[in-house]
Amino acid sequence: MFDFIARILGQLLYLIYNTIAFHNYGIALILFTLITKLLLFPLTIKQLKSMQKMQEIQPELQKIQQRYKNDKEKLNQEMMKLYQEKGVNPMGGCLPMLFQLPILFALFYVIRKPLTYMLGWTKEVIGNVIIKIMEIKPEFFPAKEFPFLDGFEAVKNNAVEVAKLFERNPYHEVNIIGAINEIPSLIEEGTEMINLTFLKIFNLGVKPTYQLNLIMEKPGLYIPALIMVILAVVTTYLSSKISMDKTASQNDKNSQANQTNKSMMYFGPVMTLLISFQAPLGLSFYWTISNVFQIVQQIITDKFMQKKKEG
Image 1 (cartoon, rainbow, N blue to C red):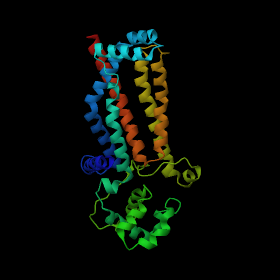
Image 2: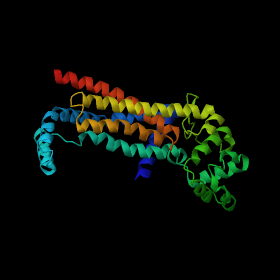
Image 3: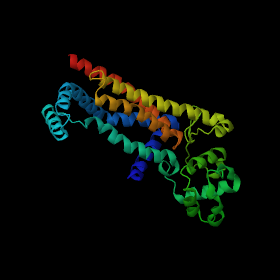
Image 4: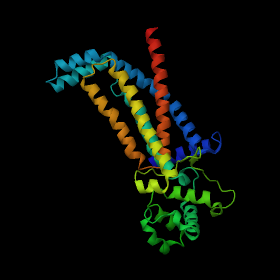
């Protein structure tokens, strides 16, 4: 399923990259994020309305929880009854996330394999380029990252088998792009290619690392990557905090719901941190931009809904 979605998103991202982003990968990801946010905006409004309704019934909900705290079956029945009476869907706040997760997972595929999903390269084309790289400058595939290179000699005359061999490393396409940008003669003149750099500082194809020896070896590559990862974590925390604070301001701050929300507020940034070190930097960049849009969107819609409520 994610492969199918990744092919659609890859083509959309490349269309943006090749047109309104002026062949700038970073700008393409920003515009891609904006488009997805706009498409999901109706669901976001629905989410906020659902959250607002949940906040309005909190006093009644807490009374039910207190009254039937020793009878879970009756508690659930009364809660469902209250939801039906007030027209509240307790899962309504999850709708945007349910749609965003497939996009996030599919985008992970796209960012990791841009030649396949954005440019539509076949295994044969990729394999032939790898063979040329191995002949000219094999150091683009370091042994510590590609420990299976011993098997290259046995398949080097079969481009498809070479491509399959190198697929054992999920980031091999990023290495290929790096090689082509340094040695343009690896591909035929006029062949479409992608530049993964942004602002001449961030290489959005690099996989971030916390290993000090690698950071010291290539500080210009890995320090900006670490900065972007930190931004992704911080913006995830801020986005969660703004949402949780809004809920907590109208509820009992010591309630079980708010205690759960506090836990989730830290769970998101931790997961962002872990995933960021398992994916090319483009995913952290996308997540940072997405969080910034989410924060701005939250502030604007909150003000609009507050004015509508007061009016």
